[in-house]
Amino acid sequence: MNTVGLLIALSGFIWSVARGIQVSLLCCVLNFIFPPIAQAIFAIYEPAIRFPLLVLVSGLGLMYTSGGLQFG
Image (tube, rainbow, N blue to C red; front, top):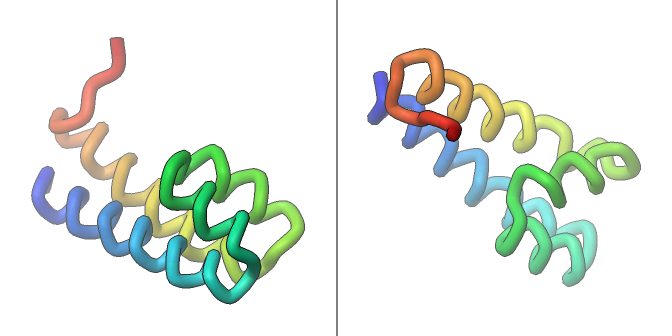
């Protein structure tokens, strides 16, 4: 499950950077450097960024619930 979660999170990351190119160069750069934070900020104003954010968060959530991602 960790591998599946990683692949889902990685596809969400790549998708968000690709969508960021369509929105603006600043969005693309910030999505590359700070993925979840920048996606959450841009998702408020840009509907094109919302679904890649959901994919990234679901992948990270899957990794967290299966024990592959730990905080603290």
